[in-house]
Amino acid sequence: MTDTEQSRMERRHIFAVNGSPDLLDIFRMLFQSHDYNVTTTNFVPQTFEQIVALRPSILLIDLAYGEQAGWELLERLQGEARTHKIPVVVLSTNKSSLERVEADPARYGGDCLLAKPFDIDELLAAVRSLIGPA
Picture 1: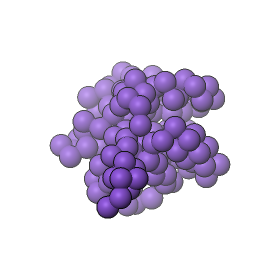
Picture 2 (picture 1 turned 90 degrees about the vertical axis):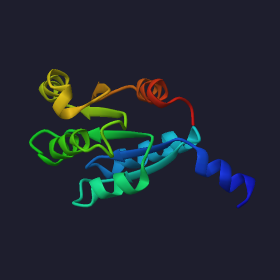
Picture 3 (picture 1 turned 30 degrees about the vertical axis):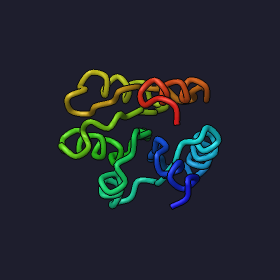
């Protein structure tokens, strides 16, 4: 393995889950430009297994209004010993969804809650505060 490959493998890894391909592209470009490794996915049945297999440094999870997938993923992540310590940034356009997460951290986790639209620098600062630089 070359030094460059070794360096890339040691970087912090961000795993973003969102239903919007455009937002996932923005996440990928933003965090890769700051030297993080990035995995993005929409809500698919295998998302939890991907998270377990990849063991990311942090998760960015969107709670879309009216969609149950994000809630189920948060509960499963929080309830499993293999994943409950992974920091989670919860994103949502719905203020009541963020309030629900904040009110029940034992059930949903959520180390940082950000209302959309958010400032890109605010998201980057939140990630850095939870896991440090890449």
